Amino acid sequence: MQPQFFNVINDELRGGEKNHTVTDPRTEDELWPCPIATTADFEDAVAAAQAAFETWSKTTVAERQALLVKMAENIKQNAEELAGILAKETGKSKILADIDVGAAIAQSLYYSKNGLEDEVQFEDDNVKVIATHVPIGVVGAICPWNFPLILSNIKVVSSLVTGNCVIVKPSPFTPYAVMKWVELSRGIFPPGVFQVLNGGADLGALMTLHPGIGKISFTGTIATGKRVMASCAKTLKKVTLELAGNDACIVLPDADLSKAVPSIASGGFFNAGQVCVASKRIYVHESIYDDFLDRLVKEVESGYKIQEDHSAPSVFGPVDNRMQYDVVRGIIEDCKRNGYNIVTGGETEGVTGKGFWLPPTIVSRPPEDSVLVQEEQFGPVLPVLSWSDEDDVVKRANLANAGLGASVYSSDLKEAERVARRLEAGSVWINQSERPNFGAYFSGLKDSGFGGEMGKQGLLSYSYTKCLHIPKN
Ligand code: NAD
Image 1: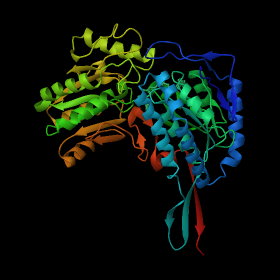
Image 2 (image 1 turned 45 degrees about the vertical axis):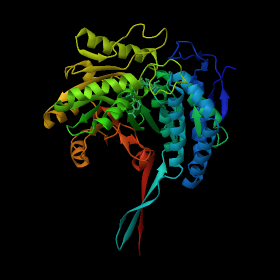
Image 3 (image 1 turned 180 degrees about the vertical axis):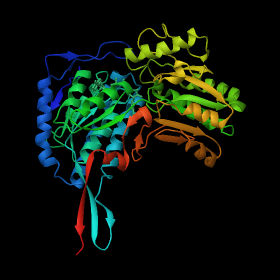
Image 4 (image 1 turned 30 degrees about the vertical axis):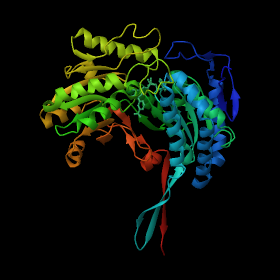
């Protein structure tokens, strides 16, 4: 039976006159109709959230965390259905879709144990200052398409554990799993606390302008992030922006290539490179360059093959949507036009019968000022560059316009840490590919973001901090 999807407003399921469908990235078949929220739906959702906030904001952290446990259990009970829907809309394999669902469960459970507590910020003989954390109000969560559940889940659990209400707007490329998740969660939270609306840029823009929304948490491109921030300024909304990265990976001459190569292949090609913190520029020391490249090509050719059957145990897949497919194809075409050395992959036409498939593509030593090196590719094409002077590679790694993540590989952890501290990125991973940790603050430097999420510091951005100055005598 064909699944059905609804906007969820005040715990009621709402269809609509206008629907849109998503194109299956594996096959280019049109998937299921999905109602587009109207302005009236949006106004109703904001009003319901504001009404719910009156009592929800007065609940204790422990009460809210007990409901997060229920939410996690509910996702677990419906994991097969959610993963099946998510696999269709994103083109992910079964195991990649399971990872998205499993991480949403684990993340919800993490925040069911980790919330914000009052803290003494100053104390002497005369006074004690206690910092308390009060919710902001209604949060608008505007989400991208690459990991629909996990990336909306962090905004939802951060909002809810801190006592806010949340309206989620998934990407129009991947609305289904998030809408089903919110539908299935009805009854866990009071009506109006957790809602979902389907729509595109117009709805997102309305959210950033509405005076009834107190905070926007946005994940997406830098260009849209700038629009979101300008729009939020009109009502002085709190705003968190999680934006694009162009992560450098630096391989030192003493790196253990038997471990580094599989890890870097995963950093570059997991989910076909559609990871905000994917390794997007690999800088290998000249002394080991040829050996590294040879091993990386073998690793990628054997481990990241195109497999059209979604049940194949693969962490590689198609590009999620036609818009991004055209962007990545354009970057590969640019490499060909300029005669760069494509050592594997590179086909952009007729790769399979149908679908947004591109083979894993490695480009050896493209110029530093090429589009592939300077812009975020967000797809399965990876430049491998060389270096011989540390100051030089650090300078090349540190871009003026991005600073989300980075990685360093060396057999000497102290040496790797020393280089990691020189990199201008919000997170640097040592001897491992870039995978955010639920408990660790995740943010972008420079154009890669504004504020951040996860961990205690992430939760603080979902709250006002109010200080009580209590005299001692
Ligand atoms: P996008 O900016 O095109 O869209 C993101 C969301 O914003 C969508 O829901 C879209 O409908 C909405 N939107 C579009 N215009 C809007 C407007 N004017 N006002 C408000 N909302 C608007 O981004 P995308 O293509 O969906 O996502 C891919 C990008 O996201 C990549 O650059 C990737 O690196 C980045 N990303 C960053 C992180 C991170 O944590 N830093 C995580 C995942 C993805």
